[in-house]
Length: 183
Image (cartoon, rainbow, N blue to C red; front, side, top):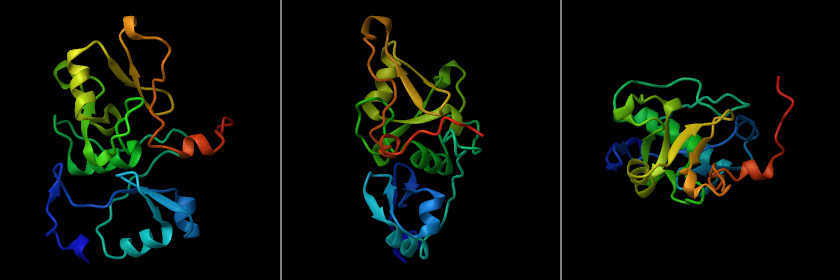
């Protein structure tokens, strides 16, 4: 009931909200765990119980690419709905090696706003404050790869073959076999 009261304040411009990612299959089974925006595991039974007393946002993702199918607007600052979709998709800072959860991240434009970047879900990603500022002052770049993941590209003098995608916030990518068959 407290989640629906609107009396819990705000965090990073959003009303206090529990943001959870899960699969449709696990939700339908009512078993397994979901992952919160802070990286905690939440048993499916608890998620279902909490959902009975909350405002719902639904982010729909393409099964094969995990890209958001639609939600966008052209303003520099991301809307609360866009931030919720970014939490659901990215779960945390997307720079490889960074473990900062989504609750503590900023919205980063893959193409900087001042260079014509748009504030759409498919052109933004989550980045913690230090990583977001680092992009502005160095030659690092970011872009979305063909799997819908954010890649961080170092300047040539720092590029030594390091990981370009952060898998920390997506343990299922390491546990589940990748489906290369396609439709």
